[in-house]
Image (cartoon, rainbow, N blue to C red; front, side, top):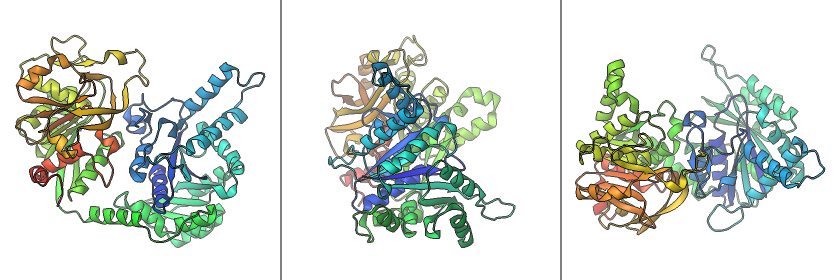
Length: 562
């Protein structure tokens, strides 16, 4: 087993996740089986209770693990299926060590950070690295480990120490450290500065890890003199200093690393059993990147949510839209709309904001209402759904977006003015969305209906079923605590609001479609989590096709692009 540890310096959010994913992509293109582990030094057990403004969206895995969004990058880039144990946090490590101590596993010993915590980290990594993620039960040959945060952070110290010991246990030829650092370029001088990188590498080496490759994040290509300076002060060859400049699309990052001989370096440093030739999988990435740069026709989608100030809050949603836009050869334009800005209360206080939000919504070719929690902004989302329904605009509601579509229809078509979800109003006269009794345990962490669940289609005429290829069922990932009230289902279906997909027992409403509308679809699950660059998610593809006016011809051709 070969281990590649990716650390970061100077600032967090520098792009370690994309670089780790790109390294995995290059290795996988050589025919190697690759897995990935993300280490987050925070004390939370998992990412489930975070606000998206903390670390971006919460990504959900097949087994129901609520994890860091970087695991989404790994899954999309490497086309693998990870488990909750691929995301390691300080909380998980301490919890497992404390549980062992309570059971008496360390009887008579003083339990300490070194060796007990550091040993637990190494044991976890070794065990998880061998778990198959490809779907063919093959044991991985390479494990890419990303250590979150920045070198020097107090909370990541036990992890750095664990890997300092680990490099000797697994032997030098099986362990390699890549350090991602920032090369700032102040506008005043325009000069690329190396001092932050020098300090960061010095700190890392002082902690006992010496980087084999230094990946320099910069806005423009790295100058030769700068490369040589980093090489001289950071104890590496100039060929081991890699420039990762800003590029037009993330699909270009694996190509950028490959051009600079990263694979040749791995083959020598880790004795990898591969033939270093131009590879088929990377040519697919090149074709995708070139196509994405050449697109001329635009398609605009209004994303109506409440975390719109941070695009990372909707990473998977944006990626799913991008995958679908690329599939139909259109350039995606996302119009972020804070749902609160659509509400009449904003018109009173900030009329300019209100009119700008409505102008954005009205000029978009399609409307997407993603998942979310809490009452804030829900009335604005309902107004956006109402507009999309009445104007015959393509609409996709995901999770909460689907539940609010049910509320909107109940209020404005069925005439139930107080129709609501019990999440926002505990005792409405018409509770069209209710909490799931078995998931209401009082504790918020990990108590939702999570992970991969099956949805059965009960209609042959369903547009979404056709987009999925006419299948009888789909397995998609869920993350919700509330569900549509099935007792009231017949009232909706009389008026053409169809529940075309349900769970295996027929108790949970999973997919809605509206008759006589160009594309009005809601799904209780989160299809964005399984979207891939070469295989876009069908609900998102349908939205983009409808927005571009191509849905009908696509369906007529038997769901083929050509």
